[in-house]
Length: 142
Image (cartoon, rainbow, N blue to C red; front, side):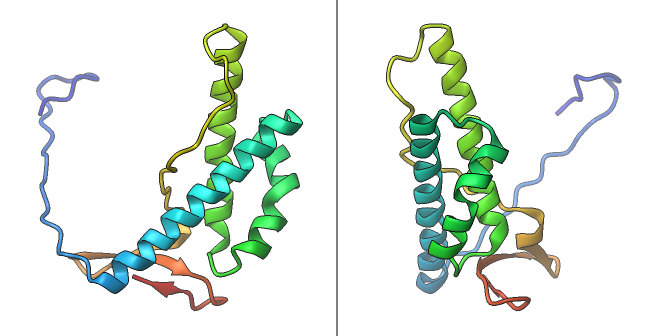
């Protein structure tokens, strides 16, 4: 792979890593995390459309406490990332609506899980641990 941003003589390497099969328990926890984030983004987009709130801070003021109450088992940064994702969807929809391209409100079917830097850590040379449950300072990681 050649770097196209500047010096063409600079070579970059692509590394492929084989992942291990997830245990059923780990898969279920990650699926719960994905479902909770999808629900949060869906709720935030719905709120934004109804109340004409498109920015992150407006969504944060309106929904952050509700999300922390409802999803108290999740680490707090996931609620923040869900609000950021919803803000991006809403701002994109607002621009498309202004241009006459979008006719209907946005629909969230699946949300991308964005792992906040506080919610993951490298475990040795071969693994990454991701926080899936919050229990104060000692959250559960898989």
